[in-house]
Length: 453
Image (cartoon, rainbow, N blue to C red):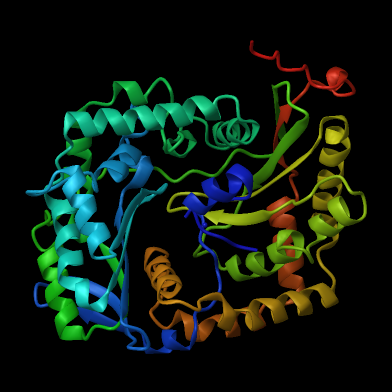
């Protein structure tokens, strides 16, 4: 099963969703996608839908956490938290009052390769909504009081994550997979980097990244093309013409097998496993999508059946393909009792080896194809979901009619394709990170926490 950053179970659910996006075909409205070019030359993919008086917009600039300055990881994350904390003539309190009064939902997020934004509004409030977004992007305040308040919140979260087994496992996995590459850095920063970030760093990041040449936009809702074009010009037209991006090299993730262990005195051990994946434009991508659904795509997958249903070792064991602009992974995670961690890791290894050596059966292939095709009409049942997927298609550099072609690509996958790709993906084994109690201590209960007086 494939997801975005982009779209995480436990920490993987959110971290991988930063890097991965749910891959399924959109609803019937998606057949009406048109390419809109505003009078000022700003492009967007657009679906006009007057079913309900709502408008949903998703947009992204190339950049994201991979553009954080060296030694200052977390800059992009702070910028995403601060853009809505006062801009133009409005301080933070007044800005949020305007959003609440008009029922406008505005958010920003720094993903691995992109700085993304989301805007939701009632049709009647579109002028105010787009104007508030314009102010946030073109004239953010970055006031000292707001910066320090948000910084304190981020540091508090990082302190919690420093003892969270899922957080520790995910961060270690990125280090093992990517070494000194920017992808190895946590997008929220570290306890060492976040205190070093200065307001000048935030302003410089916004100046370099928020530019029109890398902007991609998707809009779904009750608005006509002429009106939308004018709104886009008003909102994005004053941004710099060109971004100033630091080049990011392509990188193949570290070759398996490798294993890392982080000791932590907790009753449940966390296991993250993965390895090099398949790039989005690889000719084998669709075959990888199909065979990966067989391995880790939900309650009918091999991992779920073998590790949970047959052995009762875990509650869930999600696994997904993850692709970025400069690399790709497959990645999964699970949690198990400390005294059964070794058995769990062995069961995962065994199932990975089995599908790598023999591939799936014809029955598994047929069922996977049926699911991937049949679920498409149910996957994107709101304007927001459709806008998110339309944006992801643009970021993935897919054609505007990809939705119409997708099922044929699924149908074209053969059993030989899946067997070849299974060996390519999983033939070398796994990168595995284990966080929990040392094997010799696993049979003992966790130390009791002293009671406070």
